[in-house]
Structure formats: structure tokens, C-alpha cells
Length: 432
Image 1: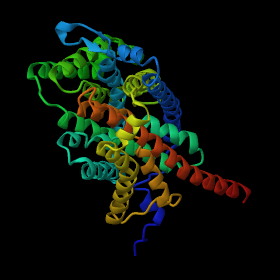
Image 2: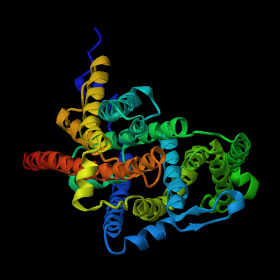
Image 3: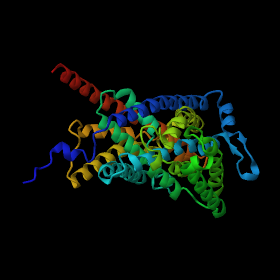
Image 4: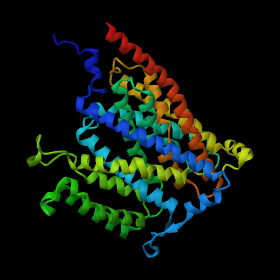
């Protein structure tokens, strides 16, 4: 008679035991994103203070200052350059991370990918439904349904790194995988629902350039006899051209970053594999560009995007009476953890698998609260949803900032208590 698989063996299909290399990679990402998340919050806070200070005119003048080449439709404000240009770097890294997960990570096999994918879908559907239930009375407000569906991986991972020193590694991997899938869904939403008109000629040109970029990325040694560390010298200008064509096509230019990231090879070609082959091009690019993204691109975007004139106590009271604000806050702080926890529970019951023995459902709820930190992508969706300068535009940003801070605070309290519990358990195990 065949031996019934143990509970732990069944669990490994969802939360696989991570190798030492994978654990080191997760730890490195946590450290980098923690620094970037702290810098992001700091610049967002500075922007909010400046926007409500005697220097507000100077701040808004800087944000709205236009620069660029008009005949190519690239004369944009600094705020638009941050949203369309600098965030493309962030989304390029998202593309690299997605490619890595699909090729060699947890999304490689359906059995390990299904739970974070379903959890991410639940974390999109429930917040969107809650927002529409609260704010859909106004057709204009309904355009913001996608604002509370996004997770800010830098901010969320920064909080986890600061308060989760003893949390199980399975929980950290789950958050990272969930956030990556969440980013993929957000990319799809932006491309499908926030592209009003498409100019086919620039789009076709962009796709041709991206194909050329991908071929060179795959065969850069054959074409240019370059070391992997020097390949970016050829690929960077081609990537900028692809970005410009995507921007001209009417599709949000950050999508170019994702498409370009998907073309970068994760693994070496067969002849170059082995211990002497060195890291793959995706790993090299991630190492080179992640500091630029977390240390400059995303914080600068936050600086130009988070500055909202609150209008004093009266303005704040008016904002929090707006269904848009209420809908975003409830959807992010309540809807995200409910959607993620319920979706995870449902798929584990359907597939008859249990959580990792080291985890409890309260831990998954804590991750759901962390996912309620919308911030970067939510701010971007808010800018795409409402007309700049309109009350809805400003109120949506106020709601995102308030919800992100509230979600981070509640998650810190919950996961902080869990972290203390896991630390005590670790000390007890050491003593025994």
C-alpha cells in the first residue's frame, strides 16, 4: 500500500523549501528594497510638506516645468517625465523579475505558482469591488476602480524587512511572489483599461525595435563580442528608442520597460552554462539598475506625485467626505487583506493542501495588510484615472497616502507581534 504523503510533503507544493541561494537572493532583495522604501517615504513626506508650505508655488512650478523636444511629442513636465520615464526603469526591473520567476523561480511550475497567483487575483477583485460599491455613484469616480488594486513592493518589503527579522522565510517568499504577480496584473490593467487611443504606426515601430532589442540581448556575444557587463552599452540606447515609440503610440510608456525586461535572457545559452559561465544577463542588469530604480527613479516619482495641497483643516475634511477617498482607504486597508486571505484559503481547500507548518493564517492576513500599501503604482493609476488638478485627482492621492500609512501601521503591529512570537520560539529551540 502506498504511503500517504505527509502534511509537510503536501505543503511543499505551495511553499517549497528554499535553497540557500534562493534565501540569499530574497535577503538581498529585502535589504535593497528596504533602503529604497525608506527613501521613497521620506521624499513623499517632503513633497507633502512643501506642497502645503510657503514654498508650495516653487514646488508646483518645479513639478510643472516642461522640458524636451516638442516635434517628437516629448516636451513634458518634470512630473510627467518622472511618471512616464523614470518609472519605466522600475517597470523594467519588474519585467526582469517576472521573467526570472517564470523561467527559474516559483512561477515556473503551476503547483507552486497557483497560490500566489490566485491570492493576487483575490487581492485585485475584492478591493476593486469594494471601491465600486462605495464610489460608483459617480461615473467620474468609477474610473478610479483600479487605484486600490496595486501593491507597492518597495514600500511593503521595506516594512517587512524592518519588523520581520524572525518571520518564516516562506512568508517572505510568499509576499515577494504575490507582489510580482500583483505587478503583472497592474501592468495588464494599465495597458488595457487606461489606453484610450492607439497610434498604430509608432506602436508597430516600437514592437520592431523591441524585437531588435531582444535579438541583440539574446545574441550580444555573437554580434558584438561583448562581455555581459558591457551589453547594456548597446541595449540602453535601443531601449530608449523603444520607450519613445511606445510613448508616441498612446500606450503608457512604462509598458515599454516591462516588454524590454521580458526580452532579457535569464539563463545562459547551453554552451555557456556551468560554474564558469558567470551570472546571466538578467541578473547583471538587475544588479546594475536596481539601485537606480530604488534609490532614484521611484523616490523622485514619489516626490513629484505625492505633493498635494490639502487646503488646511477644511480641505482635509472635504477630502475625507469624498466617496473616492473612503472607497480607496477601505479597499486598500480592508479589501486587500480580505481578498488575499480568502483567495489563499479557497485555493488551499480546493487543492487540499495546508499551509507551511511554521505559518498561521494570521501571518497570511498580515501579508494581506502589507499588500494594502498601494503607493507608487496606485499613484500612477490615480494620475491616469482623473484629470490633473481636479478635486478627484488630489483626493485620490490623499487617500492613497493615508491608506498606505494606515496599512503599514496595522501590518507592523500585527506582524511585529508575530515576529516576537517567532523569535521566542527560535530561542526556545536553541535552548533545547
